[in-house]
Amino acid sequence: AAARVLLLLSGRPESVSFAQSVCGLLGAGSGLGPWPTHCGLKRGQLVLSDKPFPGASARLPLQRPPFCPFAALDQQPRAPGVELPPNGRGVDLGVAVILQSSDQTVLLTRRTSTLNVSPNLWVPPGGHVEPDEELLDGGLRELWEESGLQLPQGQFSWVPLGLWESAYPPKLSWGLPKYHHIVLYILVISQESQQQLQARIQPNAGEVSAFMWLGPDIAAAVAATEDGTETPKHLPQDLPSSVPAVELKENGGVQPLALPTSTLLRTTPATADSRERVSTGTKFALTLWLQHLGRASKEEQSVDLPPHLPTLGI
Image (cartoon, rainbow, N blue to C red):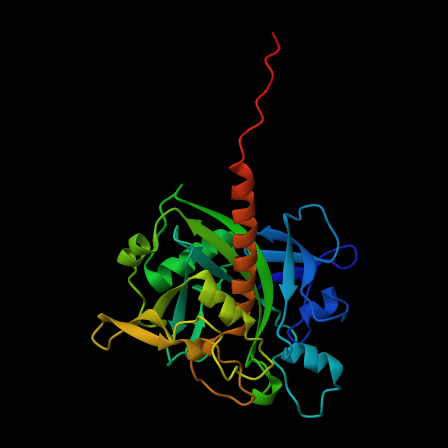
């Protein structure tokens, strides 16, 4: 299979082996990140470099969790008998869609408890990019497969937000990683309201057990619960005690769910545990979304100023 994630560190793009830390190679091990990374977004492929290169179409922040197992494996000699997946296997490419309604809320879905990877985690819709697929098309396909939402052409805009180095299991204390992805988060800005979008959602019960829309206030509180630290003991001031969500019933119907806000503020536990929480990568994506929202509102304010009247050259 063709390599999905390539690094351009000297001369020509090369694939990354499964056990290598992408952040380690691009950030040269410096600091905690995020690292500004030049990206070529191609069909079914991502080319990354720490320097500009011909064909690079974006400069995006690349980040990993503080407990990234690939960073930890970089630091320690491998004990004899410790087997990682075979070296022929590279790093996989995923894409996830942060869908923003015209009300400035974003859609998150809860993965079903029966999934082998990351059960019960709240994440944006997303998944693998097919080898011949444009990255945006892969994201929109995953959005449709998981939520039933198809966005009418011309009624949305999009912008790449950032890159996340993802492992599952997420911590070495859970066991050696079996999956290694670079996830591209794409912000898709719909012209439709939350209510209009919600009316068309038909969740795929095989993958999704609940969904919700998060506004900036709750998103900021969730994004601030740094993984690698303890779950906060007290809710930040002014936060509601629960967030409205929609849950799938056994018979295929849906019902309202009052999701305790404290559930969304949980951090990644030290030992394997499938309790409901927001994934660490999603917290990074929400941080990037809030930064984008802040920049967009600043630009709108500057557009609202009276235009400078041109002098008529008569």
